[in-house]
Length: 90
Image (cartoon, rainbow, N blue to C red):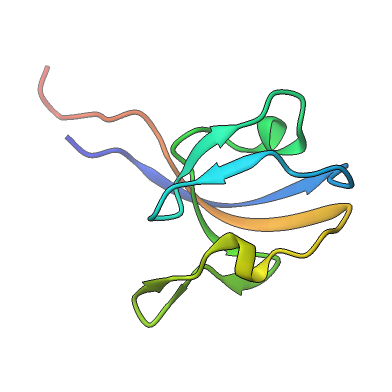
């Protein structure tokens, strides 16, 4: 079974008091804080590949979000979003 993947751009606004997202060791979204901007634009399981144009992977190694994050009202993210798994078996 394969899950279809989409590469999308997500813009988070209203981030003055924080974004409200947590990432695991592979930069998959594993936490969303209720009421924060990330909850409106991201889904658990999304993989964030770039944050404001900064890659979160360099030479095969993770770049931690805290290393590229700067406080701002708006953030633009490149995200790999995976849909539900499907197969050709009926």
